[in-house]
Image (cartoon, rainbow, N blue to C red):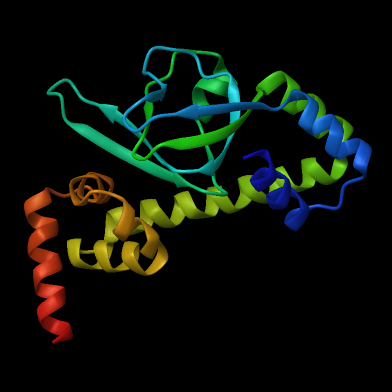
Length: 194
């Protein structure tokens, strides 16, 4: 499990053996089962979390009990509640496993020390955060300006692996539509390909 994380780092940063050992020494390995929470709304999120295997979702639940999925995380992705992490306030979001999952966790204080002491790691993290920011901007733009069909086709094009691993009802929630609308779009898309 840690080896997946080490390969991820090796592909993105050049570190000395001592720096690699410094990172490994504070890493915590966590396994969670399908449907198990990594974070529940109301708890304070304290980690930087890397997904070694599996699939998780980040979501909120409104007053009516409706789930609103804001993101998915699979292998080689990071997950967490950044707002809770930085503000040290209770999380508004839940994170649970869609599949049995394995993660590499770092307490945020340890991760900050690592980034301070290992410039190549800090640069890698900044690159990831910048890409994440751009992805969120594009998602907001799509949510505001795309039709339901365009949202779905864009999602499948960008994240084909999710279409195979994530239940359709969760994809519908992520795209801000009902499962019935998504089903209709999928049927129409399949007809158009025929």
